[in-house]
Length: 304
Ligand SMILES: [Zn+2]
Figure (cartoon, rainbow, N blue to C red):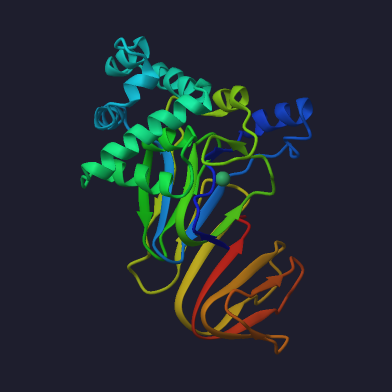
């Protein structure tokens, strides 16, 4: 369960191949040889950053922040021209430049931008995001500028987002339930005081934009919303306003987990569930279930 007040770091997770190599080379910082696809289901309005914007939108955003020219170089930089020409390798180089900027310069440019936007407020979403990130204490963090290059979305309660390997993402505000593959590999990309390995970051990110997040609306039909992600490790179902029994009729050969988010429920072991409690059904169970009243349940299982 995530309850986000201060944004969680912008990050990316390596692919399986990358994770294997990173773990072999640096097991301290990459404790797993597994990848870490993840899905979030919003419990309140949930603000996220995920994946790069289209190049035209990035060019538009750069235009909203003239101070970025101080980071990109006074002359019309080669990287920017590459972007204008639709060449995505410019993106890689621009972000590399953000990360190479020393903290004092970064702080000066962030302060300059912040002062301008305080004096001349606008309704631009990117301006508001920038002010929000600075207000959360990231005054000298390259993440405040990297964030502007990413898709900024607000999920409604019940909506879900899946983030595949190699896609930059961050959770900015709100409550959500998160499910991921069994891995701890995180490559940080800003909005954090923690250590960042920029060389690995630049290598892990998918700069082509081919890897994309998937979004899942709340089902309009009655019955559960099923979030079938491309991940082989998990699938989710979200039950709204459910009354009656939910669980296992016979052995499935795979475990599952039922989490109570609203309403009330009792397990087949006659335990009362509190909001936020999970009920784990082992792979070999043939009869475990929960009895729900006006409940919202997230059920996580392994696709088969
Ligand atoms: Zn993540």
